[in-house]
Length: 333
Image 1 (cartoon, rainbow, N blue to C red):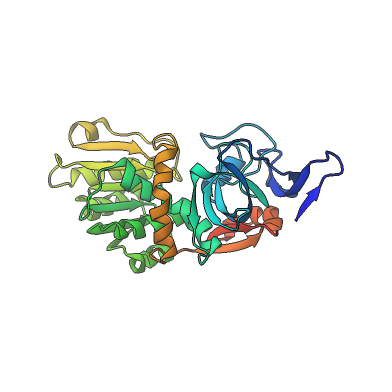
Image 2 (cartoon, rainbow, N blue to C red):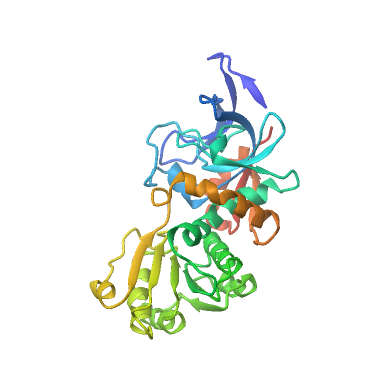
């Protein structure tokens, strides 16, 4: 519901608002954003996902973070335009995000959706799926038939990566992670082999080396010490070290830095690169949206989503450690 603010005379609507980077967002009235360019429109937000990228945006730790407060978190969402058209959109790079009843959409960063799609599924899946989809289609020269290791495959994005690697016709997908239940579930999502990371570091490295020595691409959602140990373990057991291995750094759950052994770069055809905002242009991200939307809408990817009213944002924020699914906030119009 949109209100008129008694204090400012401006249109106001409900939103999740961060006023301090150390505190959870609070549900409150906030001035409704106004379109400012010829490609911008105001939409009713139907669903917006709480991705790890959003959490780091809200606590001020993300490398692309806007420092201005107050901040409405949320980097993407599903909205309805004034003409009734559903759209998936990536939010403009401002402090006014998608955890609100109303959001500004730059039409150049959006894609139309069929009326039959579930907004919650789209909002939950697009961001975690985009990380591996874009990495394989825009950052490396992936070819059908190649082999892929997903390091950190038991997180939401890692689970998506396993499915996407198979969808794009990898010949072998190896999933590695700590959560035993989720690790076993990867087999039903398309993983050909699974490797547990829940053990002594030396044993884990040995298992990874044995299982993944012949992969062509590593999609790394962990970084930190697990990546350090895995690099040499995989490379030293590789049958042909001159065959290219591309290590794509996507997430840093295990730590923001990793020491890449110099011998790994000299003694093998080893390429380390990242995939994310900056390394991939906005235009290239947007170019991949339609195909990914089609895959999700066609139920080619399993989506684990749980919706919550946006009004419960503060309570949900404090309970995130107990929620395994991707949280999607649904504003009440």
